[in-house]
Image 1 (tube, rainbow, N blue to C red):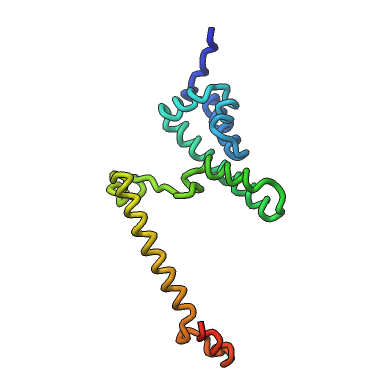
Image 2 (image 1 turned 60 degrees about the vertical axis):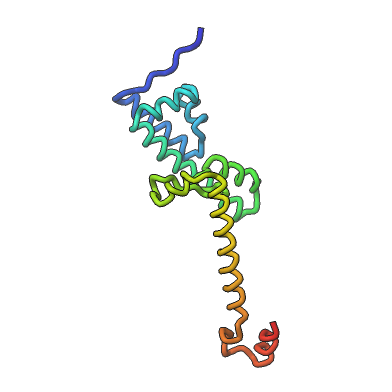
Length: 169
């Protein structure tokens, strides 16, 4: 016989205790699975609570922000001290906080309505657009690089021999 799942606390001190546990877990960098374990529920039940209870979903979203801050602080400490495993931190950040740290950061359409037509395009069309945009970005970069070595843009305080040498390029 399977153990019954814990019921969502609708009101009172039990619900406040659940919310406090969730926020504490977030402050400690915990994942949703870890939060479910602390609450004594399954991952599936946690997903149900998120879907069915807006107040709980808001608390978990806040806990997710706390967890992101915890992981960013850990990464910063490791960068400053050169201790720890940078690859592991990058792996966690990219996989767990995909919205903020994925290779191609995704902005949900509800936050940028101009993206909806692009998202509705076929993968092939999006690939063509990406190719054109990259080509234009490369042109703009080349133009900026050429401008850097334009003798007209050189600092007037440069010695003449250095100016002449740079103009050769």
